[in-house]
Image 1 (cartoon, rainbow over the protein chains, first blue to last red):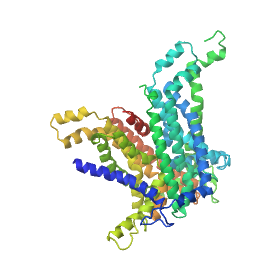
Image 2 (cartoon, rainbow over the protein chains, first blue to last red):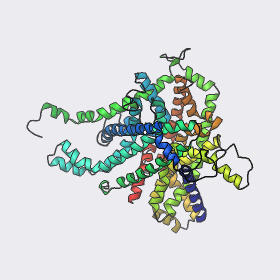
Image 3 (cartoon, rainbow over the protein chains, first blue to last red):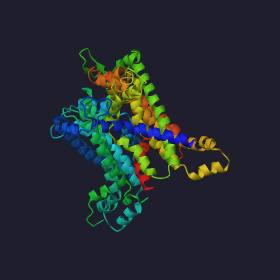
Image 4 (cartoon, rainbow over the protein chains, first blue to last red):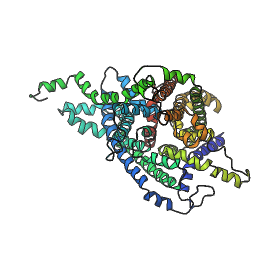
Length: 265
Length: 316
């Protein structure tokens, strides 16, 4: 029984990792045609990648978009989490469900809904370009990812020791002082973790982006465009870099989230 | 707090006013950018498309009528549901043993191994789907290896650009997703419970069937709903790997109706039907889950909980 379990487990591990390994290995494949057998031994596709104007523009656009999504989702999500944690009001459950919708619905539904909305109010998809990739896609990412911030920050607030805040208020500190010096330090790691999570999710987002993007592609859509013209080895190179960055980010995130500061349960 | 408290301060400190102030931004934002868009989608599905393909703001059920009377739409939805179900079952069969192994059998480097399973979730979705193109293609790795082993003489063409490719890729993408909630519930089963069962001379199988399996059901249910909902709504993997079969996925129909086919009311109607299916499924899962679950969490909470669990795991 144990042996059976172990072999299934190892098999699943291979199933999960083999495709990623394939992409990484083929980024060093010394031929334009991606076929078996693998011929290792070139960095030329990374060279091609760094000369590709379209891809570099897409990287810049994606980074800008992700940064703005972090600002919006924190700006709305943090007050949202406090609202859910500390206030009772009619329609609270409805508000909570609505916030979480983009997280549980397939992205395509949120994508087309936002498309109909921005078209209806007459905000062009390319508005704000070239300073930003476009207002609709920025607002769309920010809004869809509010759900992530709310869940992360709300979870931390629920575990928060309220005595500290009460003590601060008893000592005649005002609300803002208490927030800055007592509450904020306690939820700091949750905020950082949420920001990092939103940043990565935004970088990888396709469904909402697909419907809201204007003239400037993001990284996934640029790759998507390359793939539609057939597979090019350059895609393996950018994929490998994305893989690398993702691993670094998740390790940083995991460290942040188990920072002893947050461990006041 | 000072003597100079103005009427404004007193007004601000009233509980109701405080709540209203705290609610203004988040509730206003979510109403504008989520509630209105979802509402507009519903309204579009009830609007008319005139002969010049312009949207006219006149209420009609024409789109729904067309959706349910043109064979291609119901059959597409049915086909997508079947694909999603296959992906769900396959993911479950792969994820459960691994989750079980990680929760009960792995003693050393447990957190590291759990993280290793989860990391691919963070790697670009597109990359994971695309990898299968290299593997399953006509000149791909699988065909190359099979030919080298002398098992085939001509490359197998059905591997790529078929529903099988879509099912394999989606299973690959969503297996870690399915695993997370299952692992979380298995991890939470106290060892004493297993020992108690064994003390009462229940064999391994009986312990599994009567203790572990029932307790793991909420996680299994949550994992399965993720896999189903996400693969039902997927349109990238089918377009990339599905070939002619890809046109049969409901999300691809939506993409086409909002794009080249340019029939937003019909596209909106298909989306609304999809939304109804997904929401009723989630509600059903939630009900069932609450019956099994002593903590009564919702599926959505579980999804981010599972992501957050990486951190708590690392701390434990």
